[in-house]
Length: 485
Image (cartoon, rainbow, N blue to C red; front, side):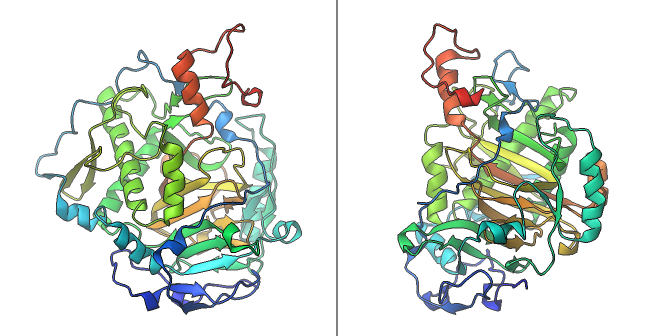
């Protein structure tokens, strides 16, 4: 029988930081996943959320980022510069504000460490023990698409069996129907919390495997603008996951295609568009990625923020000012809130640029898998900018190792460990739809994600040493890994 979170775990208001220590929630005991969680009011010190990962999942999965999906290596001669000089033009009738303190406060960009701790203390914390392989295979077996209804399973089964694969190296995967009552825990659309792996009896080895925050972005007009850019991105961009359901467009930096050495900028927009249109579009990508990162830093547990920061220290941040990673970053990010154009400067006295890699997706589903080949940051963070249907249309995120399903909704922020088994259930829509306009007509489910691309560190070292070429046979490539070929 599936269980839902208790009422004390309901939606936390991201627009408020008012809470007291006796409102801080924590499970009373470590319980088996099949048991219903009960949260009680327990005082927690700010440092209790600084959980570090001391256990790694043993699961492994082929790395999709190695395939050639339309990315092009960084090259000064390739399409020229991708940015106009200075901030984008202000539209007639719009108010233009730069580093406005009121909007920094409204977006929670000015929160102190104490305010972050106070916000985190209002999120319930739940402990789970990992399922056995037999239990997990009865809910979300690895390497299968997951359907939440028999009708969806019957519709997608023949489609996956008979379709032509864009990448013939990929295996054909089957569809598994998960009974509604099989889930060990269901995180409903009004629920939120911090999810901790407590498999080990040693508390020092406990770590956060996920976070769910509802009403993440407090300004609706900004969220609408992010969704507008998302729909434009999906329509203009190249699909980076052609054999998956829905569309996904990568932006910023990537490791690149199999067998290529330089760090690359994702060539994510069709070249038929005017260069000025592409410039504005890429600036929007960087701005959204950076806004998402700066807000997430104020709402994610510190251990997750530090995991991102530690691996990004020597890497380029999300930046399309030029297509070379060794040039100066852009000096501003620009967002819109209705008829207000907001510019924020970046740098030591301003906001930070976002993580080096990101995706924009529409109606995207993914089989049960893990990205265990990631040697850097194990966390991925995502924000759903719009979903116009309830959970009955499916497309739910899930943590397979714990049998947990998360119902998605507009303005939902999810963090997960990419090296652990996870995925997104199949939507209740016609299989195989890839047209951007048709996707929106079927079901609107769009959002943005940020992460650190696989082996970006090695690719950057190779780029600095060899430029846009492979080393000759007589050159000693100390960064070369045969598994990268």
